[in-house]
Image (cartoon, rainbow, N blue to C red; front, top):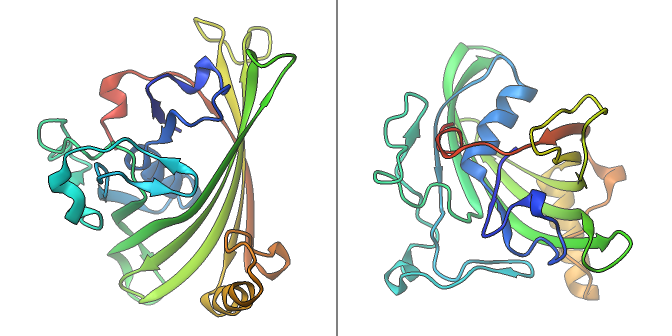
Length: 242
């Protein structure tokens, strides 16, 4: 997992994580290959660098006004070979993003291994932080995200909700998680996947009743996943790879 910030996730979450954003270009290829070992990501693109991009209650600073009309446009492709991935070639790849497109090779049911693609868009995001002992010692952070995912070759759209929590450990020594500075972050994520028919019916109903479009009902999910992970600092070279 990689998150970028003016600060760093391991510096604490007292601001509710508002200065921290997820590096989609780094994290998503690794997640796909972790959950689907037979898949190999070939290229990624994001819509990073959007002007005044706003997701839920998070608003990123304005950038070049000329980018206003490019909100839905994707960055150049960053290939697994390293081509098109440098900050000079692809300056906005790792910027705050609400959309990522990945090309990958993976097995299919009928045609063997094929080149495929998936396009994921973040629809809603909510964040929270809690203090441990006092306001200057925030050590946990939570985020709920709702996504739309379109699998291009199959022409299939799905939706999923992701609930993640992050806990900062000031001293990881003696816990089997040794780090030079003794600081790491433990994470837990729960993902619930939904079919478009359920989402459309639910959203229509909540629109009429004035409900929150960001909450889905887990009992209606077609799949549920739970996993844990550890976050630690990486250098700039690692962060720029896929």
